[in-house]
Image (cartoon, rainbow, N blue to C red; front, side):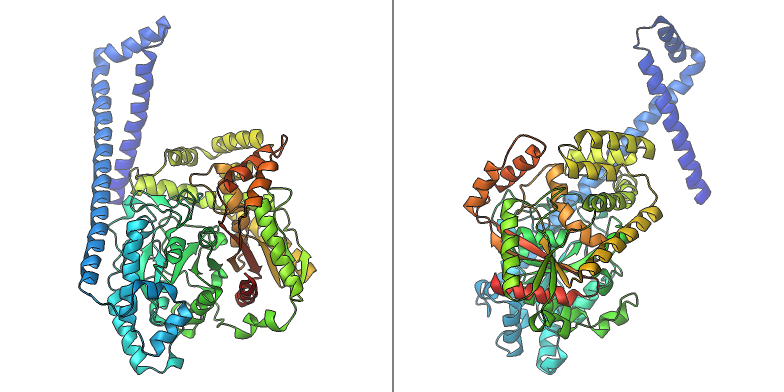
Length: 626
């Protein structure tokens, strides 16, 4: 079989080369030179070349027919998948319609926090089944108002709700985790037994996972009830959650703003009390920040990645890790109290067996911390005036609480961001071509721009580098962050060398951290509030610059809302537009803050690896003020 496949590939390659030669030969027929015209005529009309000519013509027709057939199959698979999704929503509607007087109403479920839900469950005032029904009703309402947020409905959640009620009736409360009986949602990229995990690629549809990944299994072992799968974006270097299967996810309050994934929208609409997303270059934190929620990316080695079979492979250096999104930091703390147990450590031997440290969580309440602070990357892309104002308010609050806040400038942020994009491109380029063109036979994409990026990935390394570096040099004066991303696209350095460079940067960063004797770091999660949908390349990279750094460093990082855009911020952004080097930057801020009054502004708290609880404790302190 191997020899036969190899022979077929060789034959196709030879025929492809001959096809190209034929096309070139045919084009030369149209050239004005008499010599070329004579040679082309001889090649096309001499009797001895007629057989070759018709072989090539039929082969081109064959390849076009094969492409058309694959395209038809993809369209049919997409149609069947969409019909299946609508059928599941119809079945859920029929199931809930049978319950005329629900024990828990939609409004009651949406108003309760996780701690209040837990008290109601433990006191037997409500059951897990009734609670699940209420959130399923809320999910159907959300699907009608914001259809792109929900990807799938997990139907076996009813079974797990019944099991949770059984354990609530028999087990003492101290044997139950804080998430026991709580419905939760998951990003659609998590493998859940019996359901697709497509990341929006049609070629991955109708291929349900055979087993739960270790993280989903850990949630179920903790008593949580996964009942929804949230939409995810198809293109990683983007802030717009859109794909051909589940559509476009709309911001819960500002419909023309980005929300990165469906997780934040579900929590904001109270369709789910807690959601889990994969944070690759800031996804989960930005999804939470865009909706004014709380999100937390833990240290990669503390949450299992076993069985997390993402459609596109991500470099280990960037630490793709499951991250919760909730209404309060208390919801996040409950999630990790439930997950960081001996059961999870036994299921994945690669995890460091660090249980939840209550003492470290409360350290900021009993001791005075030294907190590093920066309000933006001044020399590269400073934050907008609205974000700077909120950051300074947080700084003053911590100082009033007695903590020591010192200025801290991350070393060489430009080098770090270019390194992040280089690492991502090094893995993403071959993975994208494999998934879209080899496995997907030209998968359905949502934007024509993706085809141009994929064409760039397919170019030989040297040619890609020349094109990217030439373009980056021309735009560096006006679009510095975008030029860094282009240089990352054009990088031809090997992966081991890039990982060595990342290790060197990590050492330099933490050397500076240790010199200042910092406990935590307070910084923006984005230079702007949620940006406009379909924002340009410069704006997208400007946002990712602020989050991706801590993926590469492996730091735990959380975000929470600390303010909102005020009318004065909008006027100030308009007045700051001045001719010169920073003209484009000023125009971007003015454009993005236009009509943004009242939008949430989140801040970011970062700790050293393995000190997740310390960051959560500082977030609790900040949340008490906000």
